[in-house]
Structures are given as C-alpha cells and as structure tokens.
Length: 253
Length: 226
Image (tube, rainbow over all chains, first blue to last red; front, side, top):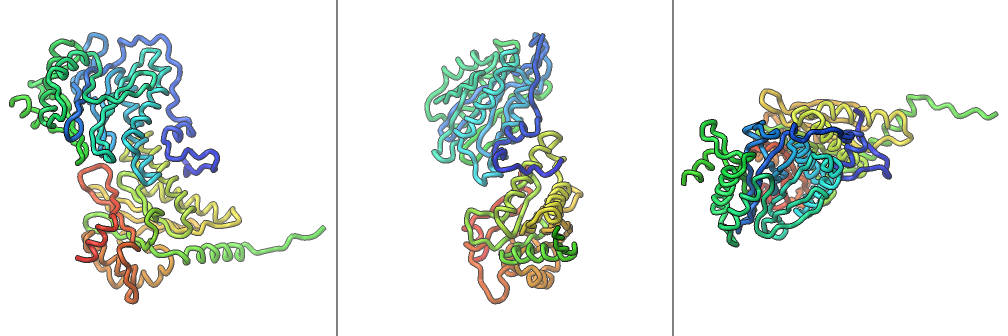
C-alpha cells in the first residue's frame, strides 16, 4: 500500500466510508437465494434514559432459525468515550456495521481534531443504515439503537432506526429485537422521568429477564456458565460497562 | 537547435536540500522524548488550533515541523493508512515502522522527482507494548529515516537544541518531569515560554485502547507553575 494521498477534488475528507470506497474495500455484492434462517441473529436490546445519561443493555443469545447458535454474543458496543450502540438482527452485517461506525467516529475526530456532536454521530449511523438497505431488502435486516451522553447539552439521548435509515430520537426508552416487545412492556410499567442510573439498570435487567421468559430467541441469565446480560451506562464521566460481578449484585439485590 | 543548459545532479540535489532546509529552519522546534511511563511530544507553537502534533492510531502519534499544509497532509494520510490497515487486518497490526517507511518513500519521491521538495520534517512516535520498547522515527525532507530510542528534535535550531538535550537528558524520566525538561530545552537559557506558546501531547497507557492525550493550556500552566 502506498501513502493515501489524494488530489484535492478526490479527497475523501474525514469520511472513513468514502475512503474505503476509494480503495474498493467492502463493496457488498449481490445476494441471492439466501435462507435467512441460516444466518446468525442477535435478539433483544434496550436503552433507557436516566437523570445522568442513559443505560443500554442486551441479552447474550444468537440464534440460527430455531437453534441457539451462540451463548455469549456481544450486542452492546462502546462507539467512543461517550456513546454506545446496541444491535439486533443479522449478526454478521450488524457487527460489521458497528466496526465501521466505531472507526468512522474516531477517524473523523483524528482528522478534524474535534469530536462529532452526538447528533452528528447519530446521522452517520443513519447514512450507514440507508446504504445497507439493499441487503436488508434481501433479508439481512440490521436494527441498531444508538445512545449516548450529549456533552454540549448535558443530557442523555437515545436514537432508534428503521431499515431505510430513518432516525428517531426517543425521549424515554427504546427496545429492539425479537424480545423487544416483552422488554418494552416491563420498562413501560416501571419507567419514570429522571430515573437514577441504578434504578434504570434494575429495570433493564428485569426487562431482559422477562423477554427471555417469553421469547425463545432471547437468552436469560445463565448462572451455570456465568453468562450475564451486557449492561452499560453512559454519563458525563463517559461509557462504563458493568462487570459481571456488579450485574450479579443487581440481580441478587 | 539550442542546447538545454546542463546542471549536474549534485548541484540540483544541493539546491533542493538547501531550499528545504531554509524552509524548515524558519519554523520553531519540536521535541519528542521517550519517558519511563510513555512518550512525550512538545512543541513551541503559538497557534491554538493549527496543531503540529496529532494522533494517528491507538499507540502512534505524529509530529511535524515546517510548512503547515505540507505536514498536515502527511498527518491525515497517516491516519488514513492506519485506519484502513486496522480495519482490514487488526488494530494491533498497525505499526509505526511501516508508516515511517511510507512517509520516507513519499518524501524521497517528492525530493528527487518534483520541482519543489517538501519543506518539512516529521516524527512518528510509537508507544511500546509489553516487551516491545517505545520508538521514535525521524523522517527528513529527503526521505532519510532515523530511529531513536531516547529523544528527537526537529525544526528551526535543531543543532543547538540537540546540544542542550544531550546535556539535560541523561536518563528516562517520568512524563511529569520530562515536560519541564522539554520546555527548558525548547526555550533555552535566554527565553521564557509561557503555556500559551506550547503544544504538549503524550502517548500513555491509561487502561484504554487509545493512548494519545493532548494537554490543554491550563494543564501545561499548572505543570510549569508547580
């Protein structure tokens, strides 16, 4: 590889995806005769707004059709110091989208010398969703939830997406995936404005437990294998993923 | 038919080198230092937004002196190279040596083939990991690469600063101490630099993948006053 220097009219600027296109990396081909039941799927994720920011969580199960494909799947990822994304849907393309999104955000920050605003990052993800639409139409549906702490306005924010790249800001909570509806009703029953972070974590765990109870594609707490849901909080102090021992304490409390 | 003037290659190279050196000498200096707990980069820079030091990747930093637009283009190219490499392979496969070689290749190419050489010198700093030591790569306007395991000085009156640094730096210091030494070396005995004239950044392990941190002026002031 030579040094990536471009003429002024072809310079991709701080856009990492445009850069990948310049090098013809990662151009998806046509998919045909795809049986989506053979594809690994991630299931339930959620985000709840709190007084200090947001709580974002997800179960650990991945399924292929009616089989459990993976028991310790990670569906919640830090995007940068103050935001996180949780994914449901076709696991392969979803994890890939998160990877490009993470690089895109830090790439911008390094090239430009300043961080993108939370809304700017949310819009980036929206454009990635729009670019993914052809694959989604063929069955590889990916649905992310994006949540973070808006440093400029000092509030937590949650964004949900549809497959066309539609971006919707949620003002209280959001859920996604096959167990999303069950999780949603638990949160709805317990949610109130200005929740303390610890309270929101308890609700999140309860919601995931209920989703696992009702939905076969959602994994519950696996005490035998010591596999716990992933729970993270984003506050002014940044992204923090709870350790398994902390989650255990919440469950036993 | 008129004959073109003959100019010997020696003369061409000499003229170009002189031209580049003059351009670089106009700028202010920069020091890169390997410390016991990281890598320190400090520069004299009165601008608050046109940085000479920048982050390339998790454990790699860039610094340049000379013409801003010329070295800034290389900084951005470095970030692109590193991010593409980290994406296609793995983040741990991004290495400073190969980036330094790419810079050398590019600078050498421009120096021999273009009318005007680049009036810059750049530094690629790598923070060591486990058994691997930290390293500094200095790349000159003509593509010469030198790797150092103690300190590197680029820019204006480099020769004078190197003498000062040779006297002042006899060991590896912790970053907090190295900053004071770096400022002393940059300002010399006859001047006092204020925090507003300085740009300071470090590569330091803090339990996160990204190790690059820029010190703001308030923090630099606090260190100077201590």
